[in-house]
Image (cartoon, rainbow, N blue to C red; front, side, top):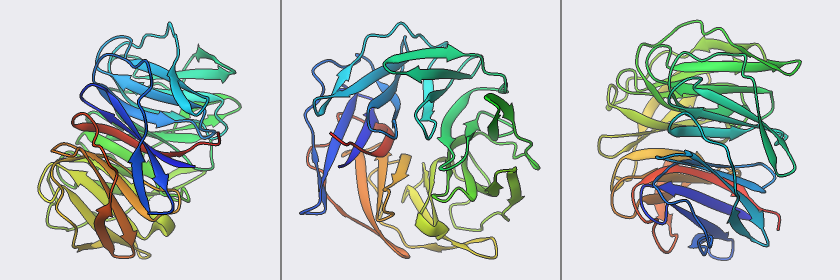
Length: 325
């Protein structure tokens, strides 16, 4: 079953939605009986639909929820991160959890065995605060959006050891969001200021050719999130200037554009995710409603998918996921 999890900066600090295939819309699920008590910062769900990780603004900075009997149940944990959790991702086989946070070591990695999360040494090193984490769809590799230069850092696991990937060219502006394309052949980072978004070819060898910067109208604004659509046809950037998202074609000759018309959102596009079938774009945002779910049809984004009750406050993280209970 397809679901959507939204982290938000209010109480209750998260919201969960179920997709209703009969209507093509979402309905809000009942909140877990017990939840963490401060504003959420990010959310991710394991590929098997068993674990949900939610960051928060205060210690312990990370919360673990397990899927039990068709609902999320908060788990007792003694894990405390050094500072605010900004991004998280599971490996494809759900045997490791990667957490990106403020303060050294900036990345914390945990082995997963049953209900036990055990921290393991991270040998890749990281230069500064992490603002987002994205795991490759097929390879043991991940990227981070980071504070300052370089604004994207990549890692590859070889014989169980994480090593940093060379970045051919650095952009000296903070990266706030990052993603892979659904097939893993592209990596992108949302940038605070020009060039707004940076797209790289990506393969098992790591970063390849950097695409030339786009020339769309909001170039230079402060971006916060990025997503690439199915078949690598378009890139979406969430930012702090009206209409709060930008939608552009990705052409085979490495041209980003042209820029396409978009619906105007009610507030900043803080985090986003594309549904597994590539037909929906979900955006956690600031501004009343705090959530937008758009349908994707080629060059057209339409704000026509409803979701019932809104999250409690400004959206801070979002993810589509599937459950099997």
